[in-house]
Length: 273
Ligand SMILES: [Zn+2]
Ligand SMILES: [Zn+2]
Image 1 (tube, rainbow, N blue to C red):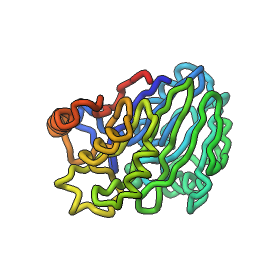
Image 2: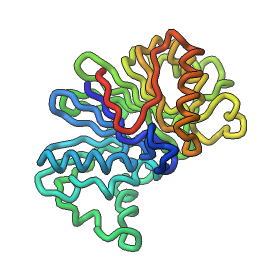
Image 3: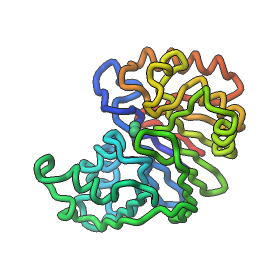
Image 4: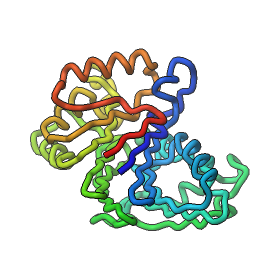
Protein backbone atom coordinates (compact mmCIF):
# COMPACT_ATOMS: atom_id res chain seq x y z
CA UNK A 1 0.00 0.00 0.00
CA UNK A 2 1.17 3.52 -0.79
CA UNK A 3 0.23 5.90 2.03
CA UNK A 4 0.40 9.66 1.65
CA UNK A 5 -0.30 12.27 4.29
CA UNK A 6 -2.01 15.33 2.80
CA UNK A 7 -3.03 16.91 6.11
CA UNK A 8 -1.63 16.15 9.56
CA UNK A 9 -2.90 19.00 11.72
CA UNK A 10 -5.71 18.67 14.25
CA UNK A 11 -8.58 21.06 14.97
CA UNK A 12 -7.77 23.99 12.66
CA UNK A 13 -5.39 24.77 9.77
CA UNK A 14 -2.14 26.41 10.86
CA UNK A 15 -0.42 28.01 7.87
CA UNK A 16 2.72 30.10 8.37
CA UNK A 17 6.49 29.99 8.56
CA UNK A 18 6.54 28.40 12.01
CA UNK A 19 4.69 25.31 10.71
CA UNK A 20 6.10 24.95 7.20
CA UNK A 21 8.07 21.76 8.00
CA UNK A 22 5.15 19.67 9.31
CA UNK A 23 2.49 21.65 7.46
CA UNK A 24 -0.73 23.31 8.44
CA UNK A 25 -3.43 21.33 6.62
CA UNK A 26 -6.05 19.46 8.61
CA UNK A 27 -6.41 15.70 8.43
CA UNK A 28 -6.41 13.79 5.17
CA UNK A 29 -4.65 10.51 4.35
CA UNK A 30 -4.58 8.76 0.98
CA UNK A 31 -3.97 5.03 0.55
CA UNK A 32 -3.44 3.56 -2.91
CA UNK A 33 -3.31 -0.13 -3.77
CA UNK A 34 -3.65 -1.81 -7.16
CA UNK A 35 -4.83 1.47 -8.73
CA UNK A 36 -7.62 1.88 -6.18
CA UNK A 37 -7.69 5.00 -4.05
CA UNK A 38 -8.99 5.24 -0.49
CA UNK A 39 -9.16 8.65 1.18
CA UNK A 40 -9.46 8.87 4.95
CA UNK A 41 -11.00 12.16 6.10
CA UNK A 42 -11.37 15.40 4.17
CA UNK A 43 -9.60 18.12 6.14
CA UNK A 44 -7.97 20.91 4.13
CA UNK A 45 -5.25 18.51 2.99
CA UNK A 46 -7.70 17.00 0.51
CA UNK A 47 -7.59 20.19 -1.57
CA UNK A 48 -4.04 19.53 -2.76
CA UNK A 49 -4.81 15.87 -3.40
CA UNK A 50 -7.76 17.04 -5.51
CA UNK A 51 -5.53 19.25 -7.62
CA UNK A 52 -3.26 16.29 -8.42
CA UNK A 53 -6.22 14.03 -9.27
CA UNK A 54 -7.84 16.68 -11.48
CA UNK A 55 -4.58 17.00 -13.41
CA UNK A 56 -4.39 13.22 -13.92
CA UNK A 57 -7.93 12.96 -15.36
CA UNK A 58 -11.05 10.99 -14.38
CA UNK A 59 -10.64 8.35 -11.69
CA UNK A 60 -12.56 6.71 -8.86
CA UNK A 61 -12.01 7.30 -5.15
CA UNK A 62 -13.52 5.92 -1.98
CA UNK A 63 -13.84 8.42 0.85
CA UNK A 64 -14.34 7.45 4.48
CA UNK A 65 -14.76 9.75 7.48
CA UNK A 66 -13.53 9.09 11.02
CA UNK A 67 -16.24 11.53 12.15
CA UNK A 68 -17.68 14.83 11.00
CA UNK A 69 -15.90 17.45 13.09
CA UNK A 70 -14.81 20.41 11.01
CA UNK A 71 -11.15 19.50 10.74
CA UNK A 72 -12.21 16.24 9.00
CA UNK A 73 -14.71 17.64 6.48
CA UNK A 74 -13.77 21.27 5.82
CA UNK A 75 -11.58 20.55 2.78
CA UNK A 76 -14.27 18.67 0.87
CA UNK A 77 -15.92 21.71 -0.79
CA UNK A 78 -12.48 22.49 -2.28
CA UNK A 79 -11.82 18.96 -3.62
CA UNK A 80 -11.64 19.58 -7.39
CA UNK A 81 -12.83 16.12 -8.57
CA UNK A 82 -16.27 16.87 -7.07
CA UNK A 83 -16.74 19.56 -9.70
CA UNK A 84 -15.56 17.45 -12.66
CA UNK A 85 -17.51 15.09 -14.88
CA UNK A 86 -16.11 11.58 -15.16
CA UNK A 87 -14.87 11.37 -11.55
CA UNK A 88 -16.52 8.78 -9.31
CA UNK A 89 -16.54 9.34 -5.58
CA UNK A 90 -18.08 6.83 -3.21
CA UNK A 91 -18.56 8.28 0.26
CA UNK A 92 -19.02 5.88 3.14
CA UNK A 93 -20.66 6.76 6.43
CA UNK A 94 -20.31 4.43 9.40
CA UNK A 95 -23.66 2.79 10.20
CA UNK A 96 -23.65 4.22 13.73
CA UNK A 97 -23.43 7.90 12.66
CA UNK A 98 -25.84 10.18 14.58
CA UNK A 99 -26.68 12.65 11.76
CA UNK A 100 -26.98 11.44 8.16
CA UNK A 101 -23.64 12.11 6.44
CA UNK A 102 -25.22 13.61 3.33
CA UNK A 103 -27.15 16.11 5.45
CA UNK A 104 -24.02 17.30 7.27
CA UNK A 105 -22.00 17.64 4.04
CA UNK A 106 -24.91 19.52 2.42
CA UNK A 107 -25.02 21.87 5.39
CA UNK A 108 -21.39 22.91 5.01
CA UNK A 109 -22.22 23.88 1.41
CA UNK A 110 -25.56 25.60 2.15
CA UNK A 111 -26.09 28.78 0.14
CA UNK A 112 -25.51 31.08 3.12
CA UNK A 113 -21.95 29.84 3.50
CA UNK A 114 -20.84 28.41 0.13
CA UNK A 115 -21.52 29.40 -3.50
CA UNK A 116 -22.10 25.91 -4.95
CA UNK A 117 -24.85 23.56 -3.85
CA UNK A 118 -23.88 19.95 -3.15
CA UNK A 119 -26.63 18.82 -5.56
CA UNK A 120 -24.99 20.76 -8.43
CA UNK A 121 -21.66 18.95 -8.28
CA UNK A 122 -20.68 17.26 -11.57
CA UNK A 123 -18.92 14.13 -10.32
CA UNK A 124 -20.75 10.85 -9.89
CA UNK A 125 -21.12 10.87 -6.09
CA UNK A 126 -22.58 7.90 -4.25
CA UNK A 127 -23.37 7.62 -0.57
CA UNK A 128 -23.04 4.20 1.03
CA UNK A 129 -23.20 2.85 4.55
CA UNK A 130 -20.18 1.22 6.10
CA UNK A 131 -21.66 -1.78 7.86
CA UNK A 132 -20.39 -2.68 11.30
CA UNK A 133 -18.63 -5.78 10.10
CA UNK A 134 -16.76 -3.79 7.47
CA UNK A 135 -16.78 -3.55 3.69
CA UNK A 136 -14.65 -4.50 0.74
CA UNK A 137 -13.77 -1.72 -1.71
CA UNK A 138 -11.48 -2.84 -4.54
CA UNK A 139 -8.46 -4.46 -2.86
CA UNK A 140 -9.28 -2.87 0.50
CA UNK A 141 -10.95 -4.62 3.39
CA UNK A 142 -12.10 -1.80 5.68
CA UNK A 143 -13.36 -2.37 9.22
CA UNK A 144 -14.74 0.42 11.40
CA UNK A 145 -14.15 0.37 15.17
CA UNK A 146 -15.83 2.81 17.60
CA UNK A 147 -13.57 5.17 19.55
CA UNK A 148 -13.68 7.54 22.53
CA UNK A 149 -14.39 11.07 21.29
CA UNK A 150 -17.05 13.72 21.98
CA UNK A 151 -19.87 12.83 19.56
CA UNK A 152 -18.10 9.58 18.62
CA UNK A 153 -15.46 8.69 16.04
CA UNK A 154 -14.28 5.57 14.22
CA UNK A 155 -10.94 3.95 13.69
CA UNK A 156 -10.39 2.07 10.43
CA UNK A 157 -8.45 -1.11 9.98
CA UNK A 158 -7.50 -1.11 6.32
CA UNK A 159 -6.18 -4.38 4.91
CA UNK A 160 -4.80 -4.90 1.40
CA UNK A 161 -1.93 -6.78 -0.23
CA UNK A 162 -1.47 -8.78 2.98
CA UNK A 163 -0.63 -5.58 4.90
CA UNK A 164 -2.56 -3.55 7.47
CA UNK A 165 -2.87 0.18 8.11
CA UNK A 166 -4.71 1.07 11.31
CA UNK A 167 -6.04 4.62 11.13
CA UNK A 168 -6.99 6.06 14.49
CA UNK A 169 -7.52 9.76 14.83
CA UNK A 170 -9.56 11.63 17.42
CA UNK A 171 -9.50 8.85 19.99
CA UNK A 172 -8.98 9.48 23.70
CA UNK A 173 -6.58 6.92 25.08
CA UNK A 174 -6.70 7.53 28.81
CA UNK A 175 -3.49 6.42 30.59
CA UNK A 176 -5.63 5.77 33.69
CA UNK A 177 -8.18 3.59 31.88
CA UNK A 178 -8.93 0.23 33.46
CA UNK A 179 -7.03 -2.87 32.38
CA UNK A 180 -9.85 -4.17 30.18
CA UNK A 181 -10.08 -0.97 28.10
CA UNK A 182 -6.29 -0.86 27.75
CA UNK A 183 -6.17 -4.52 26.69
CA UNK A 184 -8.90 -3.90 24.09
CA UNK A 185 -6.95 -1.01 22.61
CA UNK A 186 -3.79 -3.10 22.40
CA UNK A 187 -5.72 -5.88 20.65
CA UNK A 188 -7.20 -3.37 18.18
CA UNK A 189 -3.68 -2.17 17.22
CA UNK A 190 -2.27 -5.69 16.98
CA UNK A 191 -1.08 -6.76 13.56
CA UNK A 192 -0.80 -3.22 12.19
CA UNK A 193 2.12 -2.67 9.85
CA UNK A 194 1.47 1.05 10.12
CA UNK A 195 -0.49 2.66 12.94
CA UNK A 196 -1.56 6.20 12.02
CA UNK A 197 -2.53 7.65 15.36
CA UNK A 198 -3.58 10.89 17.00
CA UNK A 199 -1.40 11.66 20.01
CA UNK A 200 -2.15 15.33 20.32
CA UNK A 201 -1.25 15.71 23.99
CA UNK A 202 1.69 14.86 26.18
CA UNK A 203 1.24 13.14 29.52
CA UNK A 204 1.84 16.49 31.28
CA UNK A 205 -0.81 18.26 29.22
CA UNK A 206 -3.44 15.53 29.45
CA UNK A 207 -5.00 16.20 32.91
CA UNK A 208 -6.23 19.65 31.80
CA UNK A 209 -7.53 18.22 28.51
CA UNK A 210 -9.26 15.12 29.79
CA UNK A 211 -12.52 14.46 27.93
CA UNK A 212 -11.45 16.40 24.83
CA UNK A 213 -11.11 13.14 22.92
CA UNK A 214 -7.47 12.90 21.89
CA UNK A 215 -4.54 10.57 22.40
CA UNK A 216 -1.62 10.91 24.79
CA UNK A 217 1.80 10.54 23.16
CA UNK A 218 3.58 8.57 25.90
CA UNK A 219 0.58 6.27 26.39
CA UNK A 220 -0.20 5.61 22.71
CA UNK A 221 3.40 4.65 22.01
CA UNK A 222 3.38 2.33 25.02
CA UNK A 223 0.22 0.61 23.74
CA UNK A 224 1.68 0.35 20.24
CA UNK A 225 4.84 -1.23 21.66
CA UNK A 226 2.80 -3.79 23.58
CA UNK A 227 0.74 -4.53 20.47
CA UNK A 228 3.91 -5.17 18.47
CA UNK A 229 3.00 -2.59 15.83
CA UNK A 230 5.60 -2.50 13.04
CA UNK A 231 5.69 1.30 12.60
CA UNK A 232 3.83 4.29 14.01
CA UNK A 233 2.92 7.61 12.37
CA UNK A 234 1.91 10.25 14.91
CA UNK A 235 -0.58 12.70 13.43
CA UNK A 236 -3.36 15.23 14.19
CA UNK A 237 -0.74 17.58 15.64
CA UNK A 238 -2.00 20.19 18.09
CA UNK A 239 -2.48 23.55 16.37
CA UNK A 240 -0.38 25.38 18.97
CA UNK A 241 2.75 23.33 18.24
CA UNK A 242 5.24 24.83 15.81
CA UNK A 243 7.92 22.91 13.89
CA UNK A 244 10.49 23.39 16.62
CA UNK A 245 8.26 21.90 19.30
CA UNK A 246 7.12 18.97 17.11
CA UNK A 247 10.73 18.19 16.17
CA UNK A 248 11.77 18.22 19.84
CA UNK A 249 8.80 16.03 20.84
CA UNK A 250 9.55 13.55 18.06
CA UNK A 251 13.16 13.29 19.23
CA UNK A 252 12.16 12.86 22.86
CA UNK A 253 9.55 10.16 22.28
CA UNK A 254 11.87 8.23 19.94
CA UNK A 255 14.44 8.09 22.72
CA UNK A 256 11.89 6.85 25.23
CA UNK A 257 10.67 3.97 23.00
CA UNK A 258 13.83 3.06 21.04
CA UNK A 259 12.42 -0.30 19.89
CA UNK A 260 9.33 1.24 18.28
CA UNK A 261 9.92 2.70 14.80
CA UNK A 262 7.94 5.91 14.76
CA UNK A 263 7.78 9.25 13.00
CA UNK A 264 5.71 12.39 13.19
CA UNK A 265 3.65 12.62 10.01
CA UNK A 266 3.92 15.78 7.95
CA UNK A 267 1.95 17.16 5.03
CA UNK A 268 3.16 15.70 1.74
CA UNK A 269 5.01 12.73 3.26
CA UNK A 270 4.58 9.40 1.43
CA UNK A 271 5.43 5.97 2.88
CA UNK A 272 5.23 2.41 1.63
CA UNK A 273 3.48 -0.14 3.82
ZN1 LIG B 1 -9.90 16.14 14.63
ZN1 LIG C 1 -12.97 15.47 16.49
